[in-house]
Amino acid sequence: MKNNKPAPRRIALTLTYIVVFLGAVVIGGYLMTHQHQAHIPGVYLLLGIVLLACITMFLFMRGGGKRSSNKNGKE
Image (cartoon, rainbow, N blue to C red; front, side, top):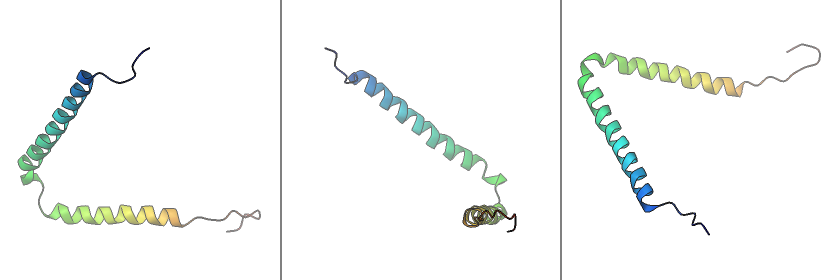
């Protein structure tokens, strides 16, 4: 009869891969923001907020305006 439990060594390797990947993402994210701050002035923050507001309004307005179908072709 075979045991369906994964081997402890395999679990340890998987956890190690996850920790290394998350560490690389954190370090890479920090270095990207730290090194590229000169290219991201404060004006872009306002532009990003406006763009995010437009996208959010589009998503909410598109979902709320459902039309009923008529057989006469009139709206």
